[in-house]
Amino acid sequence: MIDEAKLDDLLARAQRDVDDGLLPSCQLAVGIDGKVPVFETFGDATNEHRYVIFSATKGVVAAAIWLLIGDGLLDPSAPVADTIEEFAANDKHTITAEQLLSHTAGIPRAPLGPPEWFDRERRIERFAQWRLNWEPGTRCEYHGTSAHWVLGEMIERISGSDYRDFVHERIADALGLAALRLGVPEAQQDDIRRVVAVGEPPTDEEWASLGLAGIEIPAEINDVTIARFADTETIALGVPGAGAVSNASDVALLYQALLHNPGRIWDPDVLADGTGNVRVRFDEPTVGGPANRTLGLLVAGDDGFAVNRGFGKTNSPRAFGHSGAGGQLAWADPATGLSFCYLTDGSDANLLREGRRRVALSNRAGGLVY
Image (cartoon, rainbow, N blue to C red; front, side, top):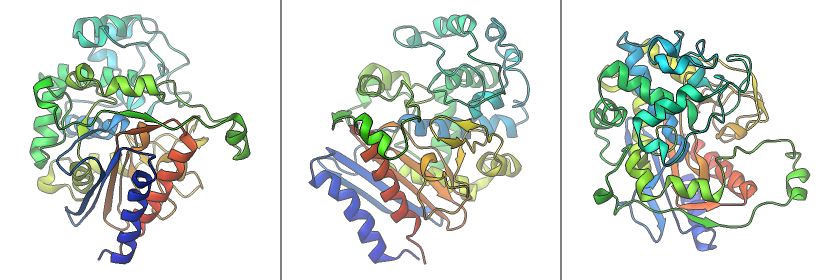
């Protein structure tokens, strides 16, 4: 059962940032027992609006990859070059899909952006040109978009379908998630909120006062880059690592599906592996400690770094999910049966305030049941 007093506290915390003028709007949803009993929007938006979910997209693409693994069509330990021959150039022949999904592939900053990313052939040409930053499988560093462009191409070559169509048909449509889409034509974008830059960056002194001076912030997390992922052309493209759109309800429902596997959409063993088997414990700069990455997601863990991984202090160590730039949250907790999604169109330059917001919301959401 959901504690109504705690729910009121969660909703009030979300409302506060809008009332204080820190965010234009935000939206949240809570899932339990395969349903979403809580779905609210605050500010100058409504429940009819969708948001760019940024890197929470990675959880969607991981769920699609798990389908191919369950179908026996993709071996995550096999070289990517077995599927994409062009990718092998410049000593990348040993990189595996597992390494792409777990951010250990060694190509965290491999360049690919507009206008090249709008053309499939030019994307593949870029794959061949990429060079390693370090030996695959020897460390973990966040791959903002590079790894998932390759995973998108793998989906296309293995399934014979456009990666966006595959996600729509095998994930969104199969689960009845009408708002969740990767690649939305311009004519269908009227309900999508555009990103607004808000706030000022923390000072060096603010970072240092919290002992966070050494944490590396990915280059993808800045106002210009975040706004690009929410422009008309890029939303239409559907960047596989950061470009999906949804409302909070559909993301919370997706994570309910990852808890309950309705209709056995996923092979149960593959699903259990993807949501619970921590494969990578290398330190990750954006975490400031062990990565705790599965085949596509992060697991909260019990080592004191759960907050840095996008979870709250009330989540169990088994909670899994993947957050996104701008403050987007998406997780599920097997211990409580809860799933939670928070989305906003306010890109807060004050990453410390954004971080506190994430923790405050997840803390409240994680403690909703009794």
